[in-house]
Length: 243
Image (cartoon, rainbow, N blue to C red):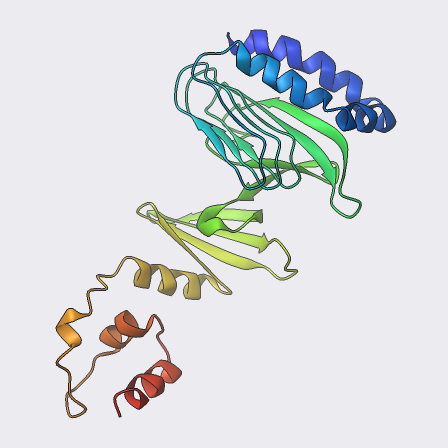
C-alpha cells in the first residue's frame, strides 16, 4: 500500500472529523479511529500496533505502518512510504521523508480529543525522524529522549552536537537536551546537560579505584565516575564514605 493510497483513505475521515468537535468526540468514544487503524494494519505486511499505555510501536520495512492508541505510546517508522499513527494522549508519531504521520489532537486540560492532524513529512516544515504530537489545537514537535516527554521550543547545532531547548512534561521552566554521538542528557542549562552527557559516555569502570587510600590524590574526573556528580558536595560525600 503506497502513501498516497493510505492518505486517500485517511484525509477524508480527518477532514470530516475536524469539522465538528462533537462528532469527533462521539466517534472517538466508539473507538472509530482504533477500528480504522486496525483495518489498515490488517492489510499491511510487517505492521506494528499496540493499545497499551507507554507501549511503543515501530517498523523499519517499506510501506510498513506503525500505530498506537495508548497514553504516551509513540509510533515510529523508518521505511519508505510507511505511515505512523497514534491516537493516545501525549503520544507522538514520526516517519521518514515522504511518509505520512497521523496524530489525534488533545485538549491537555480536559484530556479529550478535539481534532486530528494528518501530514506528509516534507523534510522542512515537518522534519523526518522527528516526533510530533497534537496538543491544544497545534501539531507540535516533541522530544522523547531519556524517556522524558518534552515539547521542543527550539533546536540548534553546535559543531557535531545538537542542543534542544525543551519544556519537560509537568514542568513550566525550560530545560536543555545535549545530543552528541548518539547519546543525550538533560540539564537545567546547556552546560549542565553537556556535563551530564560527558559523564554518561565516560568509562565508569571503578575497579581501578578500589585500592584508593585517604592519603591518595583524587582527581575530579575520578570522583565523578564513582559518584555520578561533579561538584563540591560530591567531593565531601565521597571522602566521608571513606571513614
